[in-house]
Image (cartoon, rainbow, N blue to C red; front, side, top):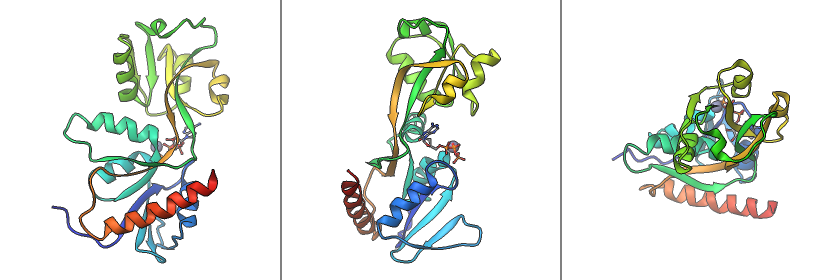
Amino acid sequence: LPAARDRLRVAIQKSGRLSEPARALLTSCGLSWRESRDRLFCYGESLPVDLLLVRDDDIPGLIADGVCDLGIVGRNVLAEQLLQRSNGGADKYREWRALDFGACRLDIAVPDGWEWDGPAQLRGKRIATSYPALLGAWLREQAIEAEVVPLSGSVEIAPRLGQADAICDLVSSGATLAANQLKPVLTLLKSEAVLAGPATPFSDVREELAALLLRRLDGVLRLKD
Ligand code: ATP
Ligand code: ZN
């Protein structure tokens, strides 16, 4: 059994699109922190709820390993890593709440010049993505055989570089796609920032702390609607 803890540890993105809104949301739940010098760990003052500032991609793993209790991360990252981890036993974490910021879509985009006539057009094509598990699962579901080209970044220039025929990437305004002569044709996942937590209850005081945080969060989210 993991050691009992009497403080809750929440992982949020250190610097990026979700950093400020995640912090603002937790602040509006009445949390405050004393910042450490290296700004990687923030010690909770108003409640025993500490922050760990990390790369967003590390958040699901930190929860799965029990290093952090909760995390604020894009549904896209959570879903991708759930699929990657699922061939290894029971899922250890899940989405607890949708947080109503960081909205984007995981879309398939093809060159402007293609006359799109449906998913079958992807048969035999190379599709670049940073979400190989989500794309692979979708292709299997559609019974489409295509080559998944995994890239960690700059996915939208892959077609121009000749690395791929199409892409599967996050889109919000679509401006980046347009700038690269691509157009979105399909949505695989509608994403937003979510609160992620363990799939099973805590067995110590963290259970009450998490319940308190959720009550406050639900109050704040209701006010926003
Ligand atoms: P890190 O350094 O933490 O790995 P990152 O570059 O992977 O940062 P960001 O670009 O800050 O991450 O995006 C974080 C999350 O913001 C995404 O996973 C996604 O859920 C959300 N998001 C919202 N709109 C967009 C968009 N247009 N492009 C990419 N991500 C978006
Ligand atoms: Zn990242």
